[in-house]
Amino acid sequence: MKYNIQCPHCGNILTVEEEWAGQQGFCSHCHMQLTIPPPPSTGDVPPVYLENQSHGGEHQYLAIAGFVVSLFCCCFVGLILAIVADQRMRRSGDFQGHGWCVATYWIVGLQIVLGIIQVLCGSLFTL
Ligand SMILES: [Zn+2]
Image (tube, rainbow, N blue to C red; front, side, top):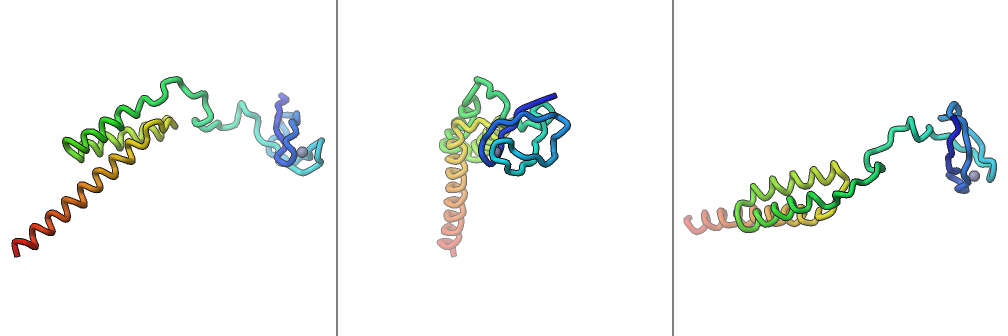
């Protein structure tokens, strides 16, 4: 089966045979040596290059919820929501609203630091 590849040197489109995959070849245009890549149908296509589904930004609401919860209710529940949203975004490759996850990490980190300072100051004053 024939398929098209692009020369990495000059960008020329070359038609190659499937059994040539992995072998060294020469570009018919610029005569530079190149390794013939595997055909697109049998090569492992990373999920990132798959057709993006239309439900973009569906995880940002979870991230926003995590941010609000960490700010006003319980920082650990908010942190869990933000981590879940973060992982789902990484898995789907859809990073719309990822800033909310980062914001939640900062809020939770700040609350922990303030908590530690409070404990330290409290123990100082009692001495
Ligand atoms: Zn070339």
